[in-house]
Length: 469
Ligand code: B12
Ligand code: SF4
Image 1 (cartoon, rainbow, N blue to C red):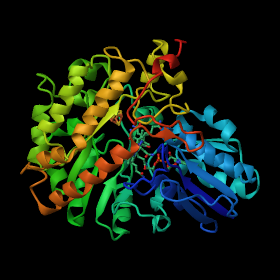
Image 2 (cartoon, helix red, strand yellow):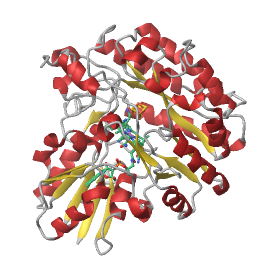
Image 3 (cartoon, rainbow, N blue to C red):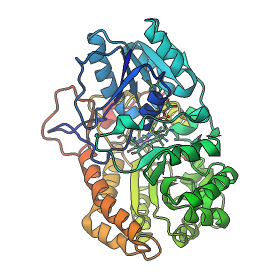
């Protein structure tokens, strides 16, 4: 038996196909292949960099989908099904919206591969694939199953290994798809299994793709103590409440942490409360716009990747501009100015739907005219087009060479070691380039592409407002 694993791209640019130059290993598919019985042949194609050989014989196609890639995934699935090959869809999007996937595949997989993937493979082998598998979610790779990293060879991924220490998060931010997927729970791998996975590979640069590496700070501390002798360098994603515990911060630095993706989301405390971003409020006796937290991060040499979700009900055009000034002033290593997105399955999506504020027929991810980084709802204090444009202005200003030069001069972070400076200088231009390329991209590949639209241009959004249900 042979299984073809597919990592879908998001879409295309107006004038050409999009190749993601900052692509990373598709860990979900590596893990699934690792959970596949060893007598099954596994091949992997990454739509972000290569053409998919639809005519190559295979017995089952498995596609991993996050919401931005849904439209493209359905196109790929259709090609294989036209050739009589069964297709199974899994990942965050099929888990949060299984009914949408049903017409596009032979089987929908809900939840984590760890718990029913082997059964699905056996069913497929016997020609009895079930239309739906409902698996639970939980700790990653129980029993120490290793991802099939050999499948990643030769695809030009960034030279950093992706792996998991934990999955999920205990917080319940209103907009977060992770909170919906894991039902606010956090699952941690046994330390010895995570350590064995690190030791199984030569590479010493690691991205722990945990949703919130520090959701359980006590367990994280134990793990960090074990990491120290391994002398790795690593990055992850972690919530801002880490700065309340200086012992934890010391352990992060000592264990080789170069920095984390940190969700600041908004500099307006009312917006932070509304979105229920509890870790950002914990130390907020006197709101100082995160200044004391940022100082703790800098004191520990953290090269922070600050992320913002912009367009909350208390955000204004002025506060969005101030967010950019905040990011520049603090010389973050990277910043993501994300438009607040209504992901289905989240409380935010339900609230905006109730309030009649969803655009693009309520399904922006499928709409043929929707473009990457466009507003998908009606904000309170500005128009959707103003929100799209304001965020584009921030992103553009952030990615300019002058901004990269100005931000570099922080002797506590980027300038504190040659490794950190090299990281800063290598990845800032790369991410800047990708950011410009992706801006305004259409989802999926197959449609007549309208000519002559500028990447940030938006119009007609108001005509897609959905009635409150
Ligand atoms: C790492 C990561 C990234 C990395 C990507 C790394 C890479 N390989 O390219 C980076 C930082 C680049 C990134 C970017 C983005 N990401 Co991201 N990312 C994640 C994160 C944190 C972990 C994913 C991961 O590798 N987990 C480890 C693997 C092993 O677990 P898994 O993916 O959950 O897969 C398991 C199950 O889902 C299931 N499964 C998965 N696929 C399949 C397929 C089949 C057939 C089966 C049977 C089972 C199955 O089994 C797997 C093993 O248990 C997730 C959060 C999450 N928990 O999913 C967000 C997440 C997937 N990202 C998300 C988003 C929105 C994005 C962006 C679009 C953000 C943006 N605005 O730019 C971009 C663009 C992505 C793109 N396609 O280009 C959203 C998707 C929301 C949704 N509803 O789908 C998530 C859920 C985060 C969130 N808080 O909302 N991301
Ligand atoms: S802290 Fe981060 S991962 Fe956790 S629920 Fe909030 S946004 Fe999601």
